[in-house]
Amino acid sequence: MTEIPTKQNVVEDESQVVFYPLYGKPLTIAKIFDVGKSTVYRWLRDYDEDDLGVKDLYLDLSANMTRIDIEKLREYLKLRNKKWL
Image (cartoon, rainbow, N blue to C red; front, side):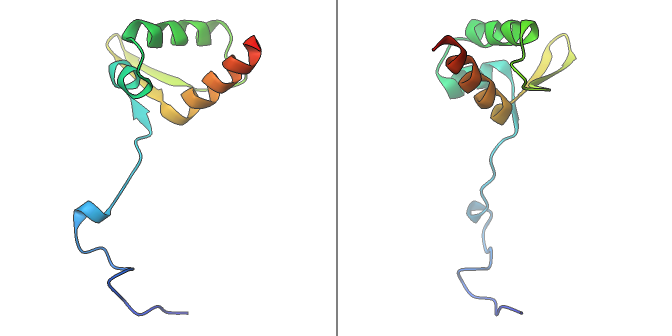
């Protein structure tokens, strides 16, 4: 089935394209979740001790290049919250 191009199904401007970021720096993650940078690093330390079944939460590419998977972080925080209930 072939659709005819219409104004609704054709991208005419780059502003019509939306994408969601997959990874973020710790400082960016802190801004997204409205917490301090030290809180993000504490989450990562806690994750290293007990990952709660969430694998590959972050990539530690070098001493100052850590990238955190945003969706996996959300999953980890939900599991962490349930653990305390």
